[in-house]
Image 1 (tube, helix red, strand yellow):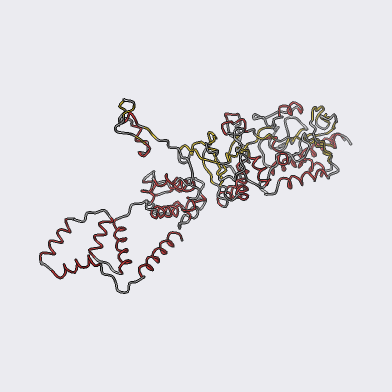
Image 2: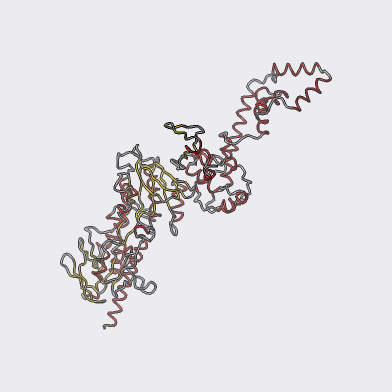
Length: 351
Length: 239
């Protein structure tokens, strides 16, 4: 088996799993390298609840993607391993892994994903200071566990506030992008909270609501009209605690042009998608460029949409910028088939 | 005015003592002016449901604050304080005190329905205005017109006695609407009436005022009637 019959896939989230399955189905070998000890990426590692827009539990939906590659003879998997060195060129790369193994591959696909924004970087919103301030991933875990309770004392919250754009659209902390999916995730979360805890009222504090495409009525309208989620146009300035133990969200309600200080029981940060914290290292290892925000740069949008700045290395999913799961899967298929097509092209030239 | 910005502040937020001495220092008048914060400190979650229970208010929860209603509003063109988009927001969050501040203009909606035709979320703002006006009325927040006062006195006597007594109706009406009992035209009316000394008529009027005539066998009819009127009114407001 020559290098030209193998594609190295880095990262086993929705994008990487999709790429690997595509490569295998086209008769090539896929070698997956995943730094964690489990496959599935962010939806599995962070314990997401029901996915947008299917409403299927993450462990079921992504679980199917995992078992598809695990049961495929054309796919081999290295867990708890990272690529430390890449030599060669398109059609003939040799990658050295942190476990000492070497992989010869004709093409490389990066599905290296993103890093959740760390709310500690917005200390004024109380994360890390107050127990009842959570992130969307923590709230998803609470939904998965099936009980909505204040972490501080276990009481059922009368009110939950979800703050949008935490770590997104914020020049102050160098995040000038929209993380694309948090609006939809938050409206979905509001409905899940209401379903589990009908006595809890959910308020979403927003600058804009960007539930794009078909998510508009399926998530935004539905949460507002059927699940009684209240949308308040205010960027919260500060989260503090009142003497009675409840949280206070302070800000300006821009629609009534008045300052607000409203008591809440739980405050949820709708955290955005940062570039993978390892991107500088990844860029160096694979010899590829990053775009201005720190995500992996693409060579050309229209005729080589999954290509990085280095020939023979492709990228898919949230490694390229904030992305939803459906698009990540589509990009994985796109990257996988383009990589295989390019390998066949090179073999044709060689023979 | 010592502090001209006062005109920008709701009068009820300005606290000032005309005479105040603190530690022997005279700080009367504007020297002790304090302004209470304009911060909103809570929502009344269930207020939206109350407005929704009135006919026309059912869809208020659908609003996403695009402002199409206010933009198309006939009344807004006359008075920029007439802002249905804003009131809908107050209703949704239960900012009742803010809504009540505009009680004297909310009823001015002319029901042209331009807002309802343009609303992308089918909120039916015209209905919301109607529902809100009815809620204000039910809660005694809007001043009653003279004709409402007259109707109420008239209805009260019908239900109570099965008939009305002219002098009583007029006296009750004046009392309800805060008008003086002695008015020039009444004095003139009395003068002309007594000029011919219609003793029988005067005696009858006097007796009626003291002994309040009631329709025979009126019994519980009044109670039944009152209940029926109440039910009809609720049906009209709450559909």
